[in-house]
Each structure stands twice: as C-alpha cells, then as structure tokens.
Image (cartoon, rainbow, N blue to C red):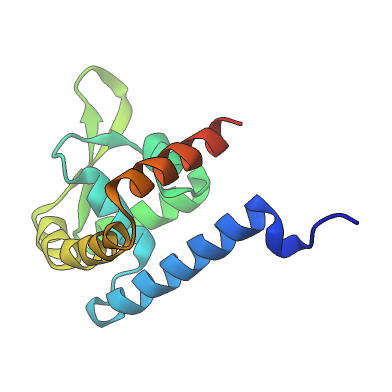
Length: 139
C-alpha cells in the first residue's frame, strides 16, 4: 500500500509554505501590505534595479501578474520604472523613497519570522534543512 498523501514530500513542503505565508500575511495585515509586495520590496532593497522577469521568477508569479503588481506599486509610489543603462530596450524596476519607507516598516516582520524559525533549529539542522530544500529544487 503506498504511503498516504500526508507523507509525500511535495504535500509536506506545500503545507509548511502555506502555514508560513499565512502567518506573514496576518502579521503584515496592520501595515496593509500584501506579502507579494513585501517580497518585491525586499528584492529591490539592494538599490540595483531588476528586470520584471527576474522579479516574477523570484516572487513566484507569472509575468502578467508581476506587471499588474508593479503597475499597482507604481501607482502607490512604492517603485518606479527606468530604462536599463546597459540596454535601453529593457526596463528595470527600482524602489522609490516611499517603497524604502514601507520596506523599513515591514522588514522587521519578515525578520522576526526568520529568527523564530532559525531558533527552532540548531545551526546544523538549519544547514541540513536548507541543503535538503535546495536539493529538492534541483531534483
């Protein structure tokens, strides 16, 4: 008899992800910032612009969804578009000053979850989990 769905790696990781995302969404609710917006701001925090396709991949959404997200974030003055200085045909997304202010408010929320999760594991356990998850993504 095959193992139940509760023992499937994909099911377990999806459940864990869903639980962690719900926790963050709830924590971000007072800031009125969707988790996807917080992720985009976090990716843009390095002050280097990023192409929309890179952001879509990193935030785990399809390009049309990312375009809508960026349109909304532009209208909220969180980000802005600018031509890539190395390739004028390409557009990069940068964090605007209001986006930086927003990121400064929400980053501690994400950091608190990360610290709590890291504290739940030994340093060796955290390394093993990270290595195992990376290996699963390569499988």
